[in-house]
Image (cartoon, rainbow, N blue to C red; front, side, top):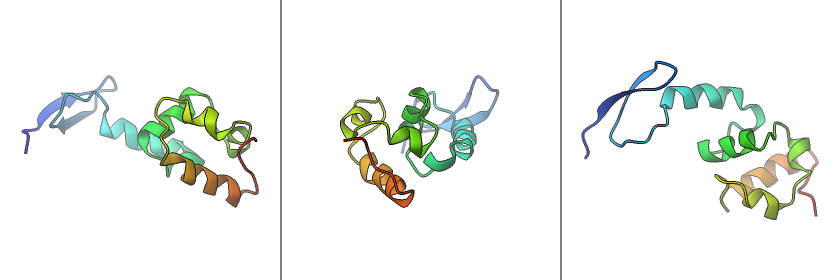
Length: 95
């Protein structure tokens, strides 16, 4: 197992990681809480929704699956989760 080193994010949070990944786990938890309907997605997928300014399922339904898969951070495993969220709201991806 790699040795963990203490790191500090731009927000001043202190955390320990075994890699040089700059993602702060404290900031990610805060973002997850604010993600609302997309909080069940992985962190990269949530960030993809944020980066593309998709904040609701209604907005998501304006995109095709193919368009969503083009977003950095969205993988094929995110699509079934997104589909279920849409179906539960009576929505679907654009055809």
